[in-house]
Image (cartoon, rainbow, N blue to C red; front, side):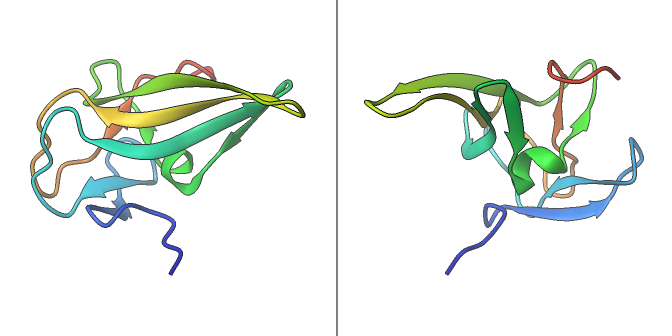
Length: 101
């Protein structure tokens, strides 16, 4: 069954901006939640994971860039990975690099 978010995460009201991603349980440093963004040509597409994470100058997550090439397409994707331990109930944050804050 398709689930738009990893099982450890939920949406909630954010003190940063409107709605954000929150931990449903303690999450260790280095956890890879999967794809948050994909770029095909000049278009960047956010997944549900990338669409709800809020900006913070001192974030607890980062995007890791992965490149893919095949005979028919070339694209880049980014996975969301924790860079700090995150406690249950804490909001996941990211330093924006694609958008102006």
